[in-house]
Length: 113
Image 1 (tube, one colour):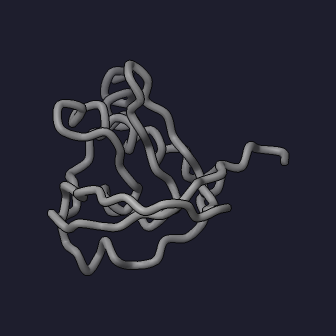
Image 2 (cartoon, helix red, strand yellow):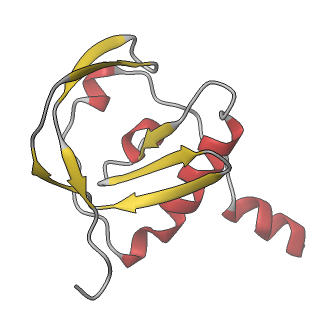
Image 3 (cartoon, helix red, strand yellow):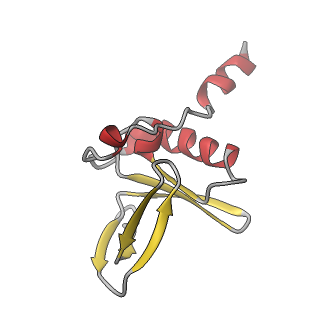
């Protein structure tokens, strides 16, 4: 029974590919969204062969949470804030196949600040 509980808590989620859903505005995450972070990290780890980052909306949750793989590490960024815009570059968003211009430096608030 205990093993079932662990499997329920750590889940690889299906990746959303609906552009209309992905374009919807997300809301700030709270401490109640810890399970979303766990599920998002599990889903990222299951897709590391072709993915370096994911947003919560990619697993069907409209919260301001992203996870990133950097070398051997995977980590979450909760409620990131754009603080400064710089030079542009183009990335390919694999879930929709769209090309998206990005111009931003991000700041990630640390709890208690």
